[in-house]
Image (cartoon, rainbow, N blue to C red):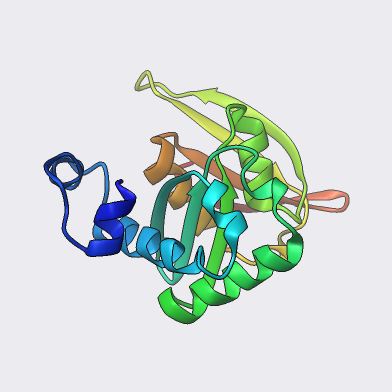
Length: 176
């Protein structure tokens, strides 16, 4: 998206076509405009590469390119989350896109730990990822919301299974 378009609110034909094709949504535009405004306060934000935003229930996921967020101070990340939650909703998760899908899954469930990731081939010739999470009590986002987010962002179906110290829970989240 053109910075000029974000600042003026008038979209060029190229950016307008991205919205028409569904590559960007009005939520994406609102989030990008918000970051352009925040750049005035925090110059480090100019180096972020925005990918996409998705809202699932009352959770807002904002995705950036790999290694963009890891270079920012934790205090700034906390301020970003606070500013975003004040404007767009109560629960905000800032996420980095990863080339390694397993790393992406781990970043979503942090501070919980992924114990196992399995690929399951289903009879209808599709595949599904089954991820076993150690302790959901430290998660701030329900596993069903994470499963829905992954499906919408990547098109990959992921089901989560819980395992608490010494035993596996029968609770499953996702399309399993």
